[in-house]
Image 1: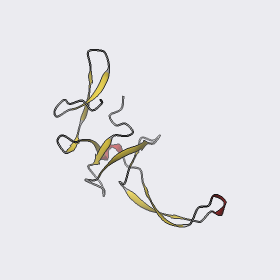
Image 2: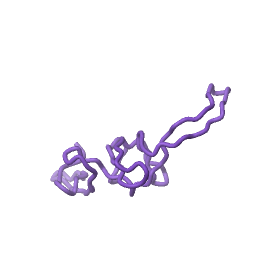
Image 3: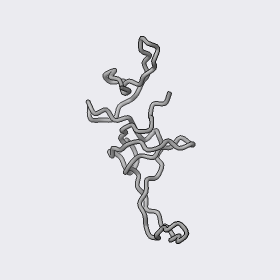
Image 4: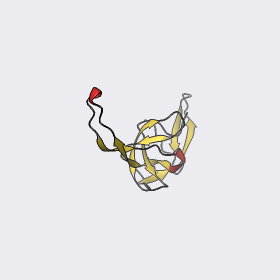
Length: 105
């Protein structure tokens, strides 16, 4: 079980996007993360009339290392570490280390 999952709200703790929050869009095969509206870069795109793509400068999200993000805890309004706990019914859930509150519903 991973500490971060697609759809989680994360906050960036290091790098040029430090302090920004966003939704985790995708976990790439090499382990890096794509976060919505975080680590934005400009991409110069050539026009391609075969697929009706216009040329120009487009803004998109670049991958970010997982060590540079933390799971966002809305109760404390900051990023927190995540641990695991096994419930009585045998189900394994993620919990915040600071207050023991469950991340998964």
